[in-house]
Amino acid sequence: MASRLKTWTAEELGSATLNAEFDNIYTGTVDRTAGRWGANDDIPVVFGTSQDAYLEWDTTQTNDALMLGLSGSRTLIVCEVADMGTNFGLTNRTNPSVLVHSSDATTVADYIEIYHDQTDGVVNVGTGAIKFSRAGSLVGTLSTTGFLIQGTGPYYFGYTDDYYALNQFSLRGAYTIDGGAGAAFYSDSVITAYAANNAYGLWLANTIVEAASGTHALLAGLAITAPVITPGVATVTNTASLYISAAPTATVTGGNYSLFIDAGTIRYDATVQTTVGAAGAGDALPATPTGYFIINLSGTDFVVPYYAQA
Image 1 (tube, rainbow, N blue to C red):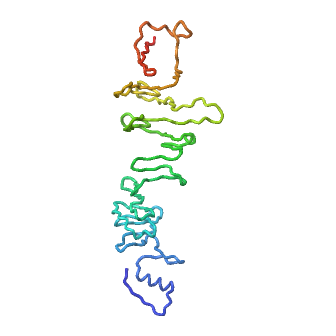
Image 2: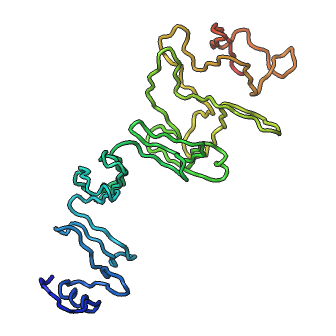
Image 3: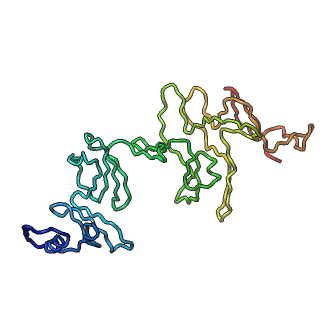
């Protein structure tokens, strides 16, 4: 860039005069037509005494784009005009970062930041939580205590379609287990019980409201549909719609149970047979059972004999 001092006396400073003088002190190409003033393609507008930031319309991209190049702190701060004199005390970033500050300049950590750490994309806040909203309604909050999903749903993980819009929470999609036993949903939480209160690994306490008309064949707190087993080359020993591995082994004043039905009538619709001497086609039972299993009714243990099938 040339160094030149020009003075005018009784001259009209028109666009032609100014453009000619600008050409003398600027080595790049500048667009100064039709009332515009700016750089042409691939000519940066430079900011800072040490040329710390560059802004240009770049044509080396697959599609032309406006590019902002940052050096020094590598930080682009968006804030109120009145706060531009505030020292937000930010450290130099390793990667270019965009920070948006709140209008409360007295709390310099009131910002949200986005950048890529050369491995993953990162969204960070200086203080507070990260909230997600849709059409002005809060749908989720991410904080140091976890992720809270808010609203009434429906919520989808893995897949969506019209059918799953009928569900408040849906988990679906193809998943391949990579080594060891696995599941579509797994919980391994460590729960510390509150004094004099119950604690559960999974608690279902829904309220189901009947429709205004029609017939509900079944309303249930928990429904288990038999899994579809796709045949392969592996050997399968057993399958089950519900499997309980064992009873707990805690020190208790009552009992440790694999299945605890506290109240209500139990209905069993699987195939049953009666013995000879009554209606039915079952064989007479042997005099000696194969063994017994224990069932607890209202706090009292009973033994129920079982027999090998003939």
